[in-house]
Image (cartoon, rainbow, N blue to C red):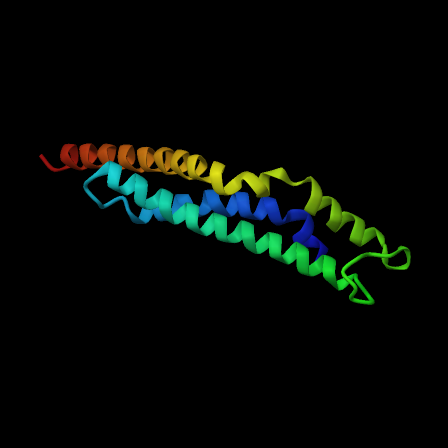
Length: 134
């Protein structure tokens, strides 16, 4: 479980990039670039914000498992190294706090990059196919 605590933000970040890549590849047959951009950005934003809130909830649940007497506070006998790592992740992660706002721009940026790439790929492919079939 500590693996998810350590690498959760990286998994969410790389998963967001991979999701933008897959969704933009699947939506490349649409005609309007602007419509595709906002559709991909919306999908990526919704999933990445959901994963961010899920990760925050997972950290809270993991921290509460170290509260042995369930009084809502950590006493000296309950404090371990694993709890200190989890508490540092909870307290020091401002990216998780601001991601619902910043995530809009990140998802738009990723969707524009990937859709531009796939549109250029489709255009070059159509030029090659025209040249192959005179």
